[in-house]
Length: 303
Ligand SMILES: [Zn+2]
Image 1 (cartoon, protein in one colour):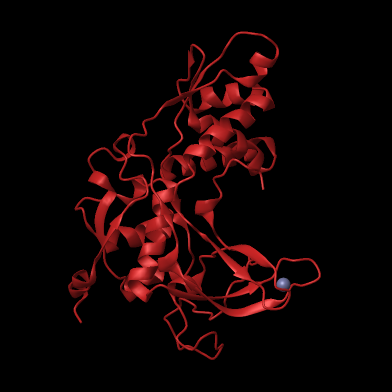
Image 2 (cartoon, rainbow, N blue to C red; image 1 turned 45 degrees about the horizontal axis):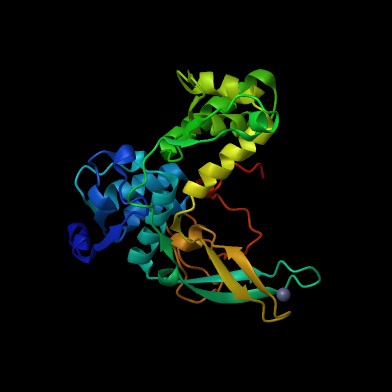
């Protein structure tokens, strides 16, 4: 089969954000496009290590419609959705996992649990949604009978922006010899805030300085609003009843090398041949595995 021929197997998709104009402009009207199966050449990017960056390199190739689609502009929810779509169109929707029961006194490993990725719900952003949104009055001032302060928020951020945030946080962490996650926590919040009261921020650093001194009560309030808007996209958890203790638990669906290189031998750990340096380990990640879910970390909660 010629590589171009894979476009014949392309499937239609609709981004959870519906291609929100304030984020994407005219790039992807209605969030609709076509995605084709990966080639082995493209697969190498994600099998060697799943990161946002590698995934976007794949998407640059496999999204065949619209033309000029720029995966570097994607917001988190859309990137996660297209990651799942890429997997499904390339390998089908069956995904087998070993799930380690999180219940105390159990810990039983449920082997080869079959997850049907196609059955996962997708929630779409409200068609009428516009940002910035205005929220307030801020609870801290209100509690003390002070001025009523309102805030303008941009809940939808591109992955690029989030990476800029990480970058800035890393530099501050280096300078101050403090953990990166501490600075990142503040920058993440700052990135969402456009203005507070009459104070419109000139940029990320400006907002960062403000957020650093903001009462914790207000930041909790702001996060709640951000997370409420961001509550759309692809369901990425799976409910499973443990066959040992009978308790139902919810598991994160991990994106590992197995996600992009499923075994045809149903968890058989026999050798799978040389894949030219990209190691196909045949390992199946349970709920407790370390996984590079860069895309799901942006929750505002310090883990
Ligand atoms: Zn159990």
